[in-house]
Length: 73
Ligand SMILES: [Zn+2]
Image 1 (cartoon, rainbow, N blue to C red):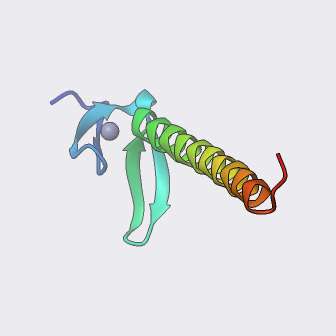
Image 2 (image 1 turned 180 degrees about the horizontal axis):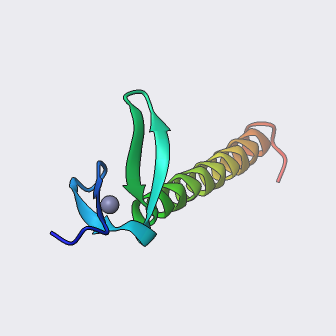
């Protein structure tokens, strides 16, 4: 094992030192690769964007239903 490798608790494997970030966890300081941190951030942002989109769609649908119920078009 090369000595610039650090254990990534997220992937449960080793990555080069320069691809790692030390982060605070409940269990203390751990090393995690930037790739997995970015992937998590991205997917969180995507979920958020998706949630916003759904909310907007639901609102628009509710409004159009309300218009129909009120006899307005
Ligand atoms: Zn990793």
